[in-house]
Length: 117
Image 1 (tube, helix red, strand yellow):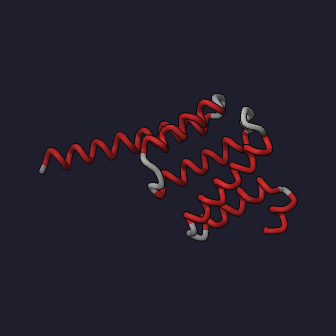
Image 2 (image 1 turned 180 degrees about the horizontal axis):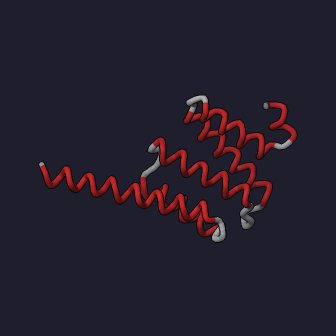
Image 3 (image 1 turned 45 degrees about the vertical axis):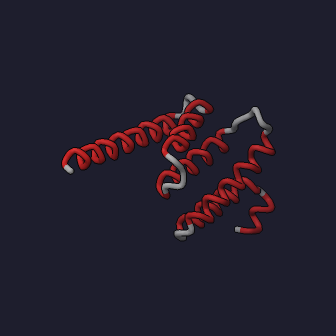
């Protein structure tokens, strides 16, 4: 796997970060994916967003959500940016809607427990 990073750095790095995640090395996977996004951004230029980059951003947002790695407003803005960058990609809109639903359900639960106290 490490040899393939030299041949096709961005795709191999994404796969490596997925492997790290599967090995329960969440922090290392997130760091590796962030490094990969920096490489992709450098190679593509600042104004051009590739589908590959959007997919990696979506994966990062999902991982940050599952690890509570950022404040909810930062995660929401990440999802919104992905939807804006790839408006025809349904998966990004679905993930945003799913995240909104999770926020709604957690707030509903929090209000229910606050009112019963």
